[in-house]
Image (tube, rainbow, N blue to C red; front, side):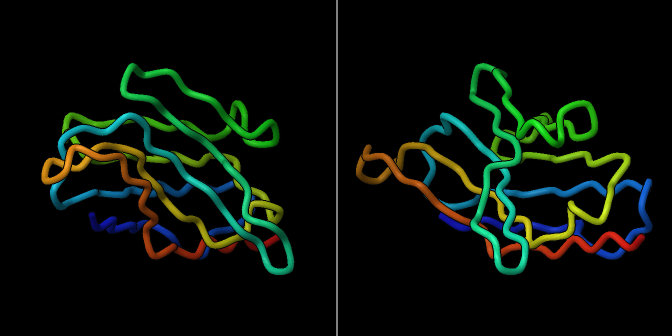
Length: 120
């Protein structure tokens, strides 16, 4: 399973960015997709997650500013980030949990990361 993330970049505080991630490969089903981030010198943390049933959860510090969604494309996830602040600066990674069609076993895959930099 491969994940291709895009949408990172440099933005001023208060600005917006949208991250997208598309999964490809031998996927039978996806149970959840999410976004994590890792700032320099800090641990990776979960930012937002959405299940196949549409249930979402967010890191407290991004609630009300970030929105995760699954577009019509079956194996994709978006993260709309509004009102960004310098503390949001990090490398953002998408990940997916699902089942492989080839073996009908569970998988957990990570994308390559996309850098988000918010200037003050």
